[in-house]
Length: 309
Image (cartoon, rainbow, N blue to C red):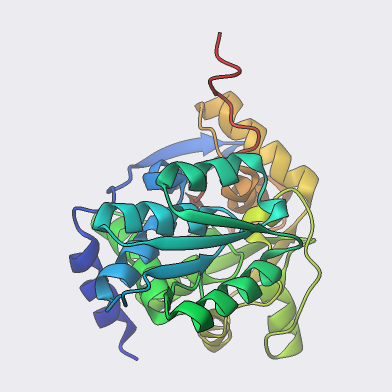
């Protein structure tokens, strides 16, 4: 597949539907870096890019679209579907949590909460697809999704990214896969995962995708049981480094972003930064580093009608 051509086409499709998120240079924890504030995207994550690309790329059948999600993807698909006038049904696991479930509900999409983890929600979504003929919008392992997420890397280049190395948090692999598909070795990409949700790291060690146990503070965003095949092929083919971080390091990075920069992200959004702060990734002298902030849907919601003064 000509991934760069796919990503260029995706950028044209989604223009006007997604935000061009800002970038900035900052020093955090003693590390100078470039950061991209993708947590300011519609519904709080990069996933709006893949959702819009998949729906516009279509064709969408009369049965509409269906998606399984840990929370963020479902909100993005619900938002994109509502914007385009397409019916959507979203399946999420209980572990998505009330804040992300409420976010999906606000999009107006149909919602079913499934006991268990993301894999259980995916099973239910596949059954719905078989029954209704709805189009499945996979959270990460589909060309339309991956190309849509790749528009983020393309956009960052347009904004003058100068870093040698980009640190990206990994769940199922849509975001890092799209970034690898765009950069194709032009920049060093480092995969960062929680120690307790590490599908890509396990796959690279095993020589292919394998099932992993999923838990931890970022599991409702990064908790894929198995890495996507598209991402694995790109990551293994490019030989990218993969590092793991603890829940404690993720929480500290999340707190630091708020204390020093007043940037509010969920644990998944702080995971890439945690690799720098914890020493899981150590830049070489003179290496210019960039960090992607990918998600802004913490639980509980920091400001709500119930909590507002």
